[in-house]
Image (cartoon, rainbow, N blue to C red; front, side, top):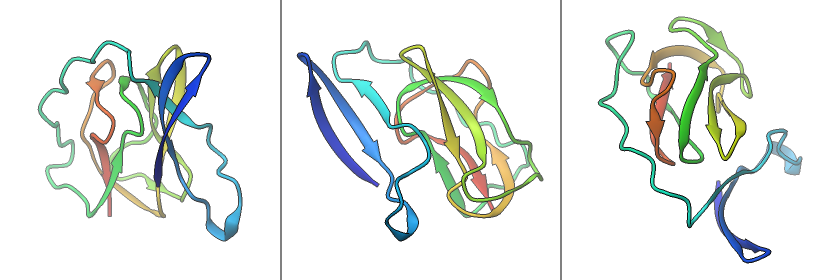
Length: 124
């Protein structure tokens, strides 16, 4: 992943771009959050649904609010499957599995405020 700062019509955005395999363009929309936006409330203490976290972390690409939990602990997911959906700037941003695996824990609940880089879930 690469971080860029972009200015559009006087608005400054921090953008995280994921590099796709084989030089293909990423399927997900860019994840952007304005620098001037009010700071979200700190995330609550992690809630491990399974009692044991997995080795692969799924992190928020942007600050926002957890809109939906799209996968369950124990569910098998493939690379690119949506695990959690975050709402930021009235946009729904899917947070996808970085690799194939099984959901080991869900660390957030619907409605939680999260910062960019916060661990949302883990995979085994």
